[in-house]
Amino acid sequence: MPTIPFIEAVLAAPPSHERAIVFDIDNTVADTRYRTLDVAREYDARLGSAHFRDLSVSQVGVSGALTARAVGAPDSTVLDFHSFWQSDDGFWSGARFVHDRPMQPVASIAQRAAAAGIEVIWLTGRIEALRADTERWLLAHELPARSLVCKPDLSVRTAPFKAQFLSQLCHTRTLDFFITECTRDIAAAQAALPSLRCVLVDFPEPDACELIRETVRLALDQP
Image (cartoon, rainbow, N blue to C red; front, side, top):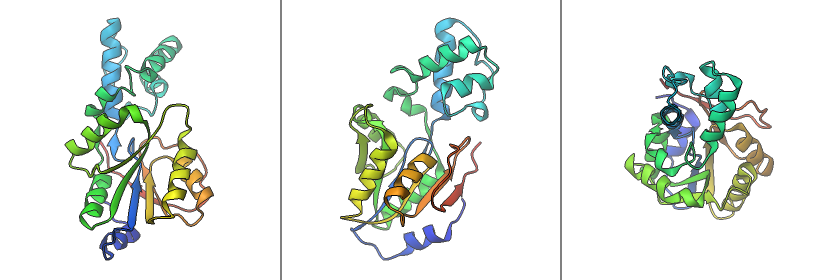
């Protein structure tokens, strides 16, 4: 597992109920590529097609469209699959979360933080309707599930929502760092909190967005 000195120092510091580490979920602690694989297989099954028959996890992109393009699907299929991927029965179906696999380097940080008496807070772009499915997934993988913050609904933009929560949290907690794979979230958070320490998870196909502050990168050795 990769070691980052300042993370090790945080985890080794004296415990305090006023300290917290905030984690994103999708593509940060949950490898969602396996969820997209499941969506792709169901898409083929529904249509009786074989567009994704040879799709490997390394080809899965961060969206339905990118995944379909990775297998050379025609434009019409790219659009159709992306629509299915985005639907309530697709990627964001809570019933599919069971296919996600924990990203062990990040999962380990969360487990060690909880054991050290640091509050672990999950801050996600998932909506409240997906809370129960999310909590079940966290508990199934022995991750602390006591503090989970979800968006109220899809009308709320994710990056500003997270930045606002982090700003409010700093009034009651010492925020050790925020960890996510999303550079947009980090840019919004550091615009609101210039001194906030962030860890950028090096998930496959990260967002291309310039950070306004230097961040620490956590490289993952994922299959």
